[in-house]
Image 1 (cartoon, rainbow, N blue to C red):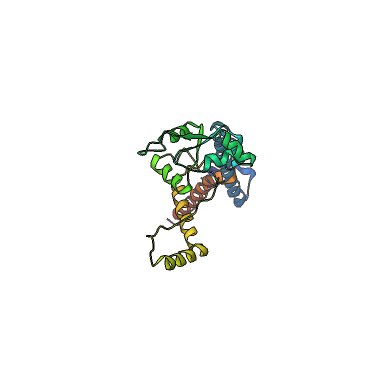
Image 2: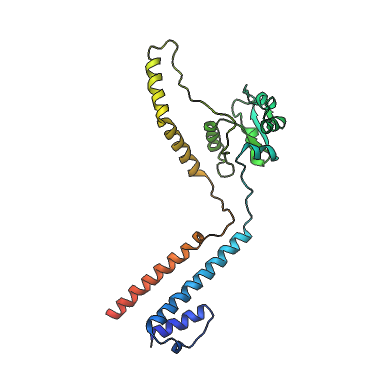
Length: 243
């Protein structure tokens, strides 16, 4: 009829460690032993489960984030032929990395205005090409083609893009608008808005991929469930004693 003795038997059976309950006399030692056994059981089970997952799930290839990595890889840099200076600039560049990219550069001259990136997106999805487009338009292209789960954008940039505002010729408000817009740019307001918008788009549809390393954070869920279970059991025990 001793609930602690029964808990010890159940805990010992779970960890395959039978013992005589009489060996632990003090009640707090027996309670601590049950909690310790349960914690070790959860730790071993969760670690084994996560370890099996890490060993059996295939590792993803490392992402290319720099131009040097792109130049050394088998990916072919490519873009559509809409009159950009990039192809010739890469081929004539004195930078060895950019020159390497220029040598294996692919220019899609069969430009289809309805869907100009359909062919190159297919090549990117096949894992053979890397698409060069302005970052803003690249994010738009990812969402339009619904490939945010299978593609990513490099952190390193080939060249900088500039923001501009188109106004009518001889507009009397050009100087006033330019002054205030320049103040917004210098204060970093526009950069903050743009980066926040890009971050929300990329975080919403980006795929989280494991790095193949087993951390303590992978085990915290099981211990949270254990603590909640112990608290619920304590509440039930108190209610039974009161009733």
